[in-house]
Image (cartoon, rainbow, N blue to C red; front, side, top):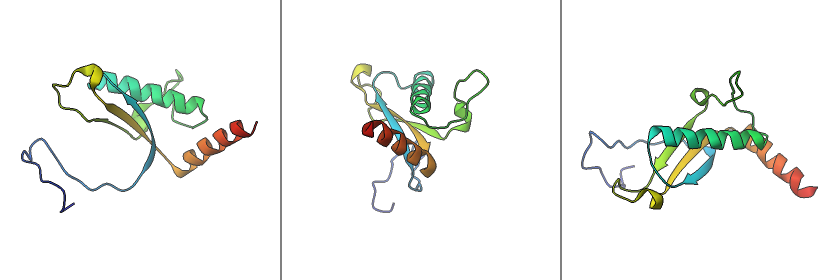
Amino acid sequence: ISKIPQPKNYNKVSIREMAPAVGAVHQFSGAFDDSHCEEKARALAAQLIRDGISLPTGEDGEVELGKVNFEWWGYNPPFTIPMLRRNEVWIELTEEQVNELIGTKGEEASE
């Protein structure tokens, strides 16, 4: 951490060291606001469920995002045209979930 550039505005930028983690990522363009990012997180979670990953769901069958560790990342300055922006949503997966996913895909490939 000592080797990275230091932010000029400490009120808006924070630097922290994070433990390594594994997850699933979906890249998307467009707006980078809470509702759009949450919609993309729900879509990624739904795809993971279809792929055989166990995620917490409510009575309505929708994934409970409050019980899933997810983040969204935007890589462009705010003046970038939305359709040219690169955004990502990331959902953390446990080692067990990764093994479930690899096992599922491996079984499909061998059929």
